[in-house]
Length: 140
Ligand code: GDP
Image (cartoon, rainbow, N blue to C red; front, side, top):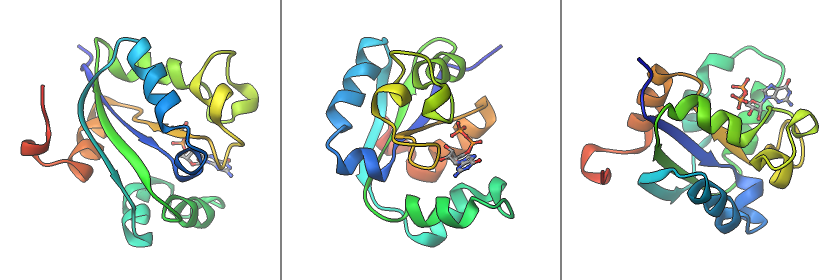
């Protein structure tokens, strides 16, 4: 059985360009319920911890520099089959390959600056949600 929660981040370049509102609107239109949400800024060490799975890859240094370069918006989203449904809504990692109407197609600049994060499994959704939110910060 698949879970009904995923973790998203609106990444620094999208927050800076004032795309937070339009992206949250797409999320709402798609029928996701917001369980938790905060605007925050990751330290370099926190960005490294969040993306530890990519440690050693050629883009890791740039990715963690970028993700700690300015504020982000993190949120737990709820909907049936959340992981798959949300990944479909955001589109491919590289906006060049993303389908029309997806969040990355509409709001992302490039593969490095791709507007949003979405968890890729139920287990990672749990780990990533715990990274940002305590139990008392969640409202279901
Ligand atoms: P996602 O699940 O679609 O976000 O993709 P991944 O989990 O594979 O990668 C995490 C993030 O690292 C992506 O959202 C991109 O910002 C970045 N990234 C992944 N692969 C590449 C790459 O080949 N080049 C660059 N520049 N960035 C990448």
